[in-house]
Length: 362
Length: 247
Image 1: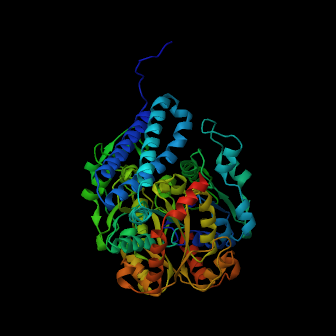
Image 2: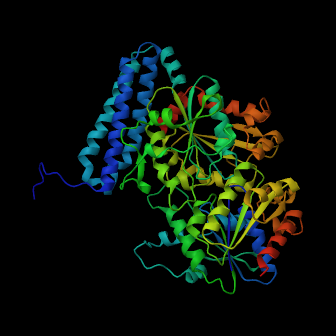
Image 3: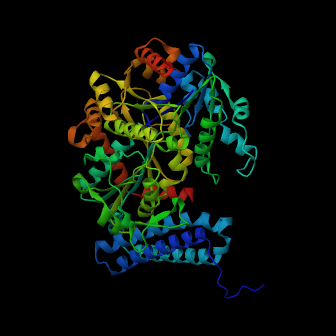
């Protein structure tokens, strides 16, 4: 039977995918407008941000092109891919016309996208929160998301609570999205952050999942897709994103880290923490990783897990964690906080190294 | 009897579960230890060697490898236990529900929760103790669905975050009608740590002392129970066994 011109009915799943593509196309279009209309240094920042975003989008789009469940969307998927490639080429061309020094400065200003993973208790939240605040102290705009259904990051940020949920008006029910909810139509990721995120010390903007444990309301499930959409679709130039993932392999397996360009793997001194890290590395393969040893005393490195940063054991940090306070406020200048500053330096160093790595992976 | 051990990641669930299972087995009980964490470590805390722990085949991974799909009839939990259970020291039988190893298209995580539920509820617990060491966080507790006759241990270390997670775990268990819920103040360094947890949870709390022997065992990849079964923490976990067994 000929199907030319015939409109087929979309499944909820297909609708959700198309909505995601539309959202992505709108975000990249928005970035391109910003780059084209910006002047001076902001123009370079716009183009490097667009290039990175298009690059990430192309990478994320590839599995969709191969997905058998989405065969019916083949023309839409191909058109979207062409659009992504077009943005990528436009950005590369604009950047090729820029002075190398201007481009490097823009790369430094370009927002970092960092996911933090590790075994439970390894120190993910402490490191996420401290890194977020130290980035903000450099004058950068920072959005920190607690993706753990057992929130803890808020204490380490110093807001005295673990809870900063998206309000109901930022969410909408949708059958095709996993868990049945998504970010409200028309609400752009940076708008969600500007309107709804809590402002933590040093100006870090902060959101958490809803609370788990209320089976009737399913609040955690309701907000998880929206929070991931905010991280994945964020398109304002110059924002750093820090995502604190849930303990263990489940959320990396579900690719909660897919928004990130760098993954920090936190390893504690215990053998089991190292075992977890070894299990996590293949799950996040393809994204550059930085291994951080936390609560380091003087034990030998775990085999195959030589850390780039060692955060020493520090009783003052342990006391802050006990009390639910920010180590950065309670133990400023401590060796542990200095090590976190060292991690921030690594994260904000020239991204060329990671770019090369990405090329190699591709 | 069924026991579910829950709490924040790193709170000490596996350490407490492993030593508790060994203490219960020593008192003559048949103990089935279920590692419900997709990052399974319990076998190590029960005293199985590192190589065995890494090669151990969790139920879900084995079923998927053999071509089982969710359209096939649900396998009998007792049969799965016979096939995939491993004999650990002290007579404890240990089985893992599912391990996440690499990116794949199969949804292992819901599968592992599902396996936990059918296993925790489906195994005969009339004349033996089924002890489940749950995944970090609260999600697995919702899936495991302990009932009025079951025991829930909410483990916390002395950090504000861990105490908060335990507090919510207790509220969830109470909401499910669980009668016997105990708070476990792990790595307690003082009475104040125990009191803080007790006050937050509003239920009975027992301490498991901060103990260098546990840390030493972990660094050597062995079970604390096998390193020194009379160390302060192991002695405290013996008191947890008393509490669990009191009628």
